[in-house]
Length: 132
Image (tube, rainbow, N blue to C red; front, side, top):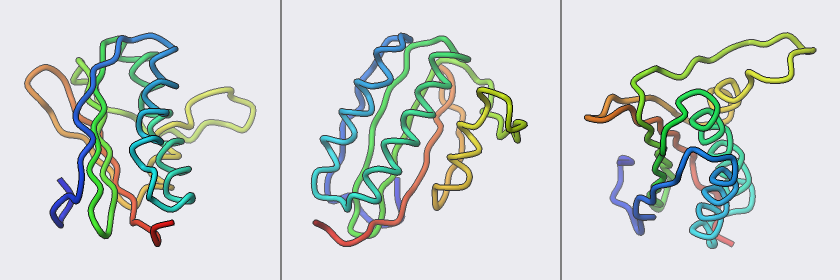
């Protein structure tokens, strides 16, 4: 959880390890962030797309998505069924992939991973801008 108490939470929802789940999860988060600044909403949508893409491509397990909004921040959590940690890579310009965790590490105000009983949780936090 974020440092201050959530003003509202997006309850966990499970998704199958399918490409279609990536956009469904992203849209679920975007709908939840209706009153968060467009900048924060856009970055959050990008980062959740990257995390869920990693699950579908690498973990190949179901995943869950949840989020908390506080007056000062947003915390998003994606859990999957493998303990393999995410890897921040620095791909060459001509490589077609490998930038997901690099984007998370550069655009999030904080991020990390934690073991859970049946896999791992990857989270990121963004500082909130002014409500729209």
